[in-house]
Image (cartoon, rainbow, N blue to C red; front, side):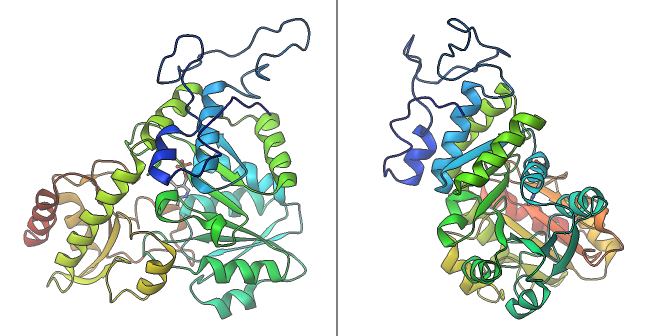
Length: 392
Ligand SMILES: *Cc1c(COP(=O)(O)O)cnc(C)c1O
């Protein structure tokens, strides 16, 4: 694997400093402060096998991708990061590296729909089996694990769209007791709010499409690991299968990550203020936000997260019709899938992000609407949401 010199990643600078500098050495030729985008598919060799900086062919490595991977490893506190063309490509590569036919995987019963689809439609036909369980119920997790077969315990916290909080440290212990690999999808929290490897998890996966990229302009994914043997396997499949991120995508993601800390501070503050305004609203049955003292995972979230993040879901009184009308009548909150960008988005999970799990145990109640709270002015955002509820 390739490596460029990096004076910042290894040092104990604080997170916001590393977000801006780790993996971001200035260009040694020109002094350009921002490392260039290396638009190249191949690299000249100084004699056969004489690779400059280890670079040979871009599926195996490209300096722009290396820069993103060093940055991600530094931010998650992992030994090695691998970046991919999408979050699902990252997950697929990790699953191939770990699973074989006959293995069993345990996932939350509100896991991201695309992750469930990947396992149930691609890995199950290949001979893997899956069980889903409420990850916030530790006894239920213990009972669902099959000591002889469970190879992966897959955690997502906060979960989507009901913002359930699962205890990463406790689940890591449970998983390790029977030799399962403990994987955390850290997309909703981002490493600024939560660092699963430091809580005992073995692997972190990301859809960098969301908070890490942060501007809704690039798709990407990542796998971050500590174990050298697993790193070797994931690295081999990244090269051997080839779902890598292209240089422009890697560069845009790096650019987005520079402001991760300030964005997440604002996302969290805005979401907290809006959630507090929505509690007890006459048009709502429930507000799901871990920053609310009444949320069942509030104390756990306060312990394992730096702040509560930018995602809120609400249950609208009266069922599907008013819920859909609400999702269609905000102005600043634009109706779209995805989350984690600077601009606010609103979605109707039952027919949008979670349409693929309709009719399964993972189906989302039809009165739930999900808000990805952006970093616009908090009063503008609050007025937008309250105005749309008033018009129901
Ligand atoms: C979006 C998302 C994914 C999938 O990532 P893509 O980049 O869309 O492939 C996985 N997990 C979570 C939690 C997500 O929100």
